[in-house]
Image (tube, rainbow, N blue to C red; front, top):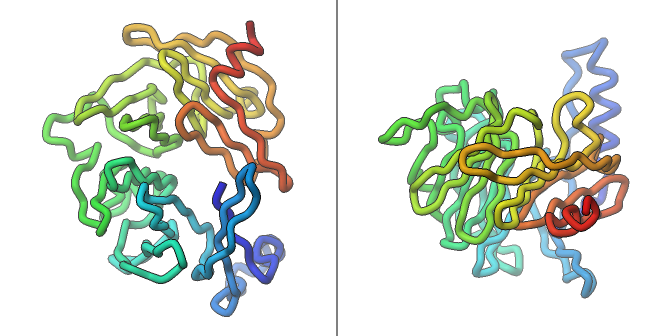
Length: 276
């Protein structure tokens, strides 16, 4: 788990500003330009030595297979750079623009970058209109779901969930929330009518776990089995950690949840064993 530490509680500052902004919307937000941030990795073996990191709101991070870091700010204006690449010691190597309205960022095993955008990015005039976009490691756009040469059956209006399993890209997006796999440029799609609005997915063979969802589905993990063209819900298991979590993300066969300083991991196989 990669984590960012700051020398100030910027989340508390933001909450205080947001509360005051309800009655005074013109009040400027907190200034974090002088905030000192550090990036480290937490694992069962301990914590790695931290490296310096530029402070920004809602920073998203992932790592390339060769150890370089990708650091992204989800919001930007025009073509201003909002992505930087750092080496393992924190030295900047490159900077480029990945567009506005970023919901998910994933570094693939082949060194490319996959970015899923939320609705404000998709309806804009920038690169986010592609919905789900693949970039080279230096920020060159390679492919966009909504602009594929052979149009898909539907478009990405809001990329709710994005995961990489091996070399496959898995996603679940508004409006139908079908489960979609991209493999070697080919798409496979499974209709999903049972769990709408999930924010993360994990995959193990023919089984998928979706985390969260609309309404009563929110505080649950949902196990589904992939049929020929339909994803069948097997069971939904209560998981209060998912609701109001600081982070819910799927990677491979595992759902990762961070809430109140606790990191929880839920595997597809573990959920299958729990259900029986």
